[in-house]
Length: 441
Image 1: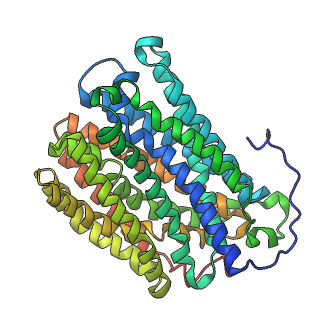
Image 2: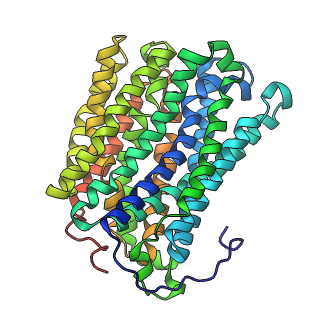
């Protein structure tokens, strides 16, 4: 991608520190783009119950979901490529340009899925095209995370960096909520169950493609990060894997702290809709509503947790997630698998998400504070994408695989073990708020 989009090297001239108004607009503008990116990404998971039969031969519901979950995981495997390419691009040529291009890639992927005929019409070509579209989206979202985390952290002031950076997950969750909201409206207001299975599932992908194009133009108006503009490192060192290799401890820290957090996040958000239907026995409509309500509260919690991290530090919150996650994951999932009570299910998922918020609200700023400016986007995005692709992207697939083997409880132990590994990293790492590389420049 970088060789194709060969750009003139940026002149790294100092720029004035942004005003409060300019800072806020940049954070809002960057976050809105993040919202649309993640809406496009999560629409696939939210509507997989409806389009699984369109792209794969008829079979059991679990078998079809395994196929769609496998492609979901494949999209995640492309994220390290996106984290590498877009991280390098952002460190060499600017955060704003990288953010603009990533949303363009997402738009193309969504449009392809929206217009691709089903298995009945074009046979094996249908799932192949679906795979290619998800690979493109995987590259896009892989580059989006590291670049947006870097941009938001650099645009925020030191005193409120945790609070402002938490809006990355606010808009990430909002994107997921928007996907679920579209699903609820189509389910309850506009379409029948049969219409959703037949053609209605294409609508949200088309909406995502259009929104992404709008956001692409919005991102072109953003102010470039002053930290990036002021950095005078030699161009040949910016955004290279060789330069990143000089920070092995930080790279391993990103992978280790992400491991448990990403599995917990995807277990209690993306996978919950299917868990409630396939395991607990809820109907699709109630499962969607429970997932939507829990995500609304989860989203609203992020700025609060980010604010607290600015007051007490990042490390205590990460440790709280690790300890509580190890102690509560198995009981919560066990109780959840044996209830059909709407509000009990809501409460159990909400308890889990309150624990996970100790990670989600601050993980972006923690990673950004680990790296110097000339490799920050690459350092945040690339190792994070590796951890997410291996563990987060496979969480749903592993859960369904254990269920197909009649050992679903093994997945509960798997999640707990991964959180425990991350807890050891949280215990040993420095508090990045007190040792931030952003302030060291």
